[in-house]
Length: 194
Length: 398
Image (cartoon, rainbow over all chains, first blue to last red):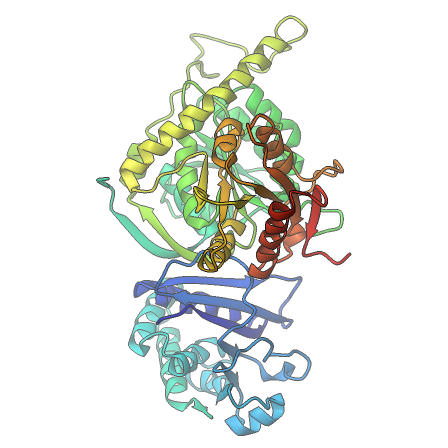
């Protein structure tokens, strides 16, 4: 990784945009990367649009300003497309990944994205989470999709670390850990882009 | 330098890193008020207590005023005592801050720097601790989570040093550092406990065989002498901070001094800054250097005592200086860091031109372009030999 990667996560309060950024950072840190993960705190409550960020690099990271031009954007909830500019600041060569049953080309139209230098990926993370975890919590499958689209981590590294993190919180509920691992793997396989 | 301590690099938020430092320091008493505007620091620490990872007496109190009062009481009794706070919580402690320092109690308190309300705001600026700059506490500021962790461990030794015996605030930027996750290298628990040692107070309140009075009436006869001694302790603190920094460097390989300089030795223009913005400035300085611009920085770690002599020496070769304040003192002549730095430079043989930028109030982002603008302004000041104004407001709608 020659340059520092910057990632922006869009979600609604309660969907796990902050947790996704923390999980990705912890997984990347565990394999020796330098990382940052930070949410943008507003007066949000459950259901309100929230944003969080990652920086990942092979070199120590000293910058502490907000991320303005993320190479990668992950959108956990497609329902605020149109009211929030989720494509804001993405540079040429950047990637946006959306949790949606739509195809990448349908989503590109919906986003009104005319710049072909930005790639669009889609994955139905909500459905995957319902089928694997048993409820709609799209953040872990979106991690799998993001890793596929960005190559920022090895998928096995992500799964290994996520397992470890979840074991801390859900040590008596192995079905949750198992479901999350399946969700990550399925999203990793199913994400499609153009 | 031979480094003896093994370090573990993990991903932690600033709050988690400071809570880990507190766990490793293992204070006897922590008193805290557990709701807004408290920080996650005491929440995480209280879970260490309930999980049996520390045997600290954890005292939940009914306000920040009571938190500092209970900490003062515990410290006077001879216990190594801590609390943590932020913003309006620190403001509510105000009265007792002076009692802690005036009673010469070596309390260590992490403070997450956040704006004071009016209007209501919870985000980063330095107006909380800068307001407490004359409360007699030592102020250590941190650029990132690692420095907050390292400062905490050193703060215990600084506060309790027999030449000092003063309380210490360990400050870190709210949200940017407190809630941001970064890589942090933690020391082994035993390394930290060996470094901090155990706290022995000369005259504990609970030594009933040798009773003494704490917090007595101290009127025209002796109050002034006590304040004079307190002022002298702050003067002595400077050398102690350096000495503890040396000792910590032998252990960890990271040297902490009164301030950090970045590409300052041959700089023609420089900024003076506190906290996380220093990290952002380093990136901009590297960019300017690659364009052949001799830009540098001085990042203040120790604001109280203010290292005026050392700062004067470090900056005296610079032509133009911008002091960045993340707090306004509403003095009409800029922020607190500007006043101190400008006063320090008064005795320089060749006085640099010094201007002030108040920035980032209430968490307003400061990015590379803003820092670049400051350097462009400095280059103009250097070339023309003229200041346009003393005080500038950076990144605000006017």
